[in-house]
Length: 234
Image 1 (cartoon, one colour):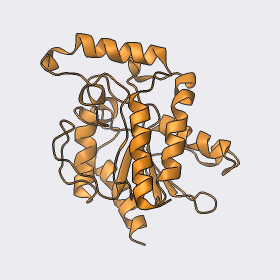
Image 2 (tube, helix red, strand yellow):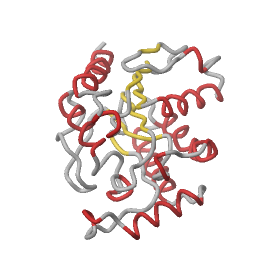
Image 3 (tube, rainbow, N blue to C red):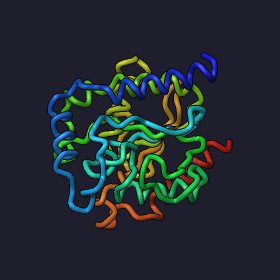
C-alpha cells in the first residue's frame, strides 16, 4: 500500500471510530458526561463521541493506552488531551523528541507528533475507567486495522496491563504468538516477539492513581521512552 493510500485508510478508519455505536453502555455514558459536564469545563462543548487515534502515519513507535478519560479526551476529542495523564505523558514525549510541545490542551492547540502514533484499547470513556471484556472485544478490530496500516512500526509501548492484554490478544488471535503468559507485564520490561514483530515495551499507565502515589514518576516514564528512542536509533 502506498503512503498516500495508507494515510487515507487511516483517516477513513478514524472516521469509522468516531461514528461507532457498537457499545450502548459506553455511548450512553459518554453522552451523559458530555451533557452534564464538569463544573470547571461548563463552557466547553464536549466531544462526547468515540475518540480517534492520532499521530504520524509513518510512525515507528506505537503507544497503546487504555481508554479516553471522561473529562479529558471525551471532552477534547483527542487521545490523552486535557487531563493529568496527558500532562504527564506529553512532557515525556516532548523531552524525547516525539512531540512538538510539552502539553496538550485541545484538538487545535498546534501539537504535532513525530514518529509516534497514539491509540487505545477502547475508544469510549467507560464508567469507572473499566471497559468490560465484551467492550474491549467490540473495539479490537480498530486496533487490528491500525497495526496493519502502520507498516513502519519497530516498537510498541503498552500503558498498563489491560493495554498489554489487548495487544497480546490480537497477536494470539492471528497466530503470531503462542501464549500471552510468555510476555508478562512489568514496568520498563522489554519483550522480543517472534519474527518481525515490533519490540514490546511495558509501562505503567500515567493515571492520576499511579502518578500521585509515586508508583510512576517522571523519571520512570522517561526511562521507557528513552529506551524506545535507543531501539529506534539502531
